[in-house]
Length: 242
Image (cartoon, rainbow, N blue to C red; front, top):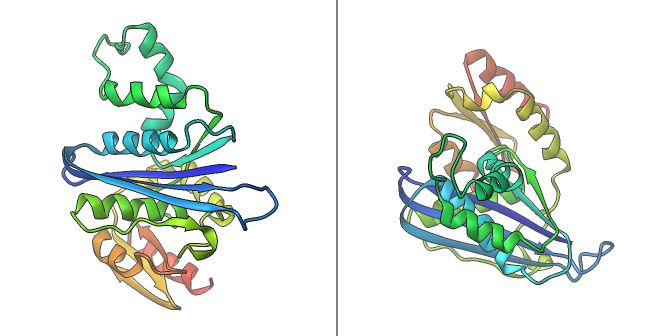
């Protein structure tokens, strides 16, 4: 009954970076009365996005090391999931060399992640980034704020006093993730605009930064990238029916 959301960020890649983890520890499968939420995060002066993603997962798992419960880790990094579930055994057999005989990048963090995950019952799950999943969005805010040098107030306490009581509710977002994964070209495509909906008011934004400024930390906010004028109108219509 341990859930960990993680995310990492780098301004410049390489550049100033930050990472964030939100750990939810539930003592009972039938009650949230004794559920505790712990936020972790940090800053590095010069780093990469992948290193921050790895750090968030590694330090999140380190925090719960020794607990006997199953741990579910949600991350939007395919690099981390593929590395820890598919590639790492081959890397170790080959002396930390890739199939092309190149040295594995970020070996120091991969070794630490492998060590801390060893002996724990860890299930790795992919979630799409910037699609409204509460835990992922909170980790993104922590990571980007640290990367930007913003003073971050990290929470540690009972779920009942947490600003995001629906932190574990990803039922609706699971459908959005499935849709996003079925059309991976959309996530890689250049944005025409970003559409946001807050308190029933819909706005369009030219940049993600402007969209993020409006929805960041706002309960019930929704946002989506559009690819062209027609797509923008369809998203506006979609949000208008929610």
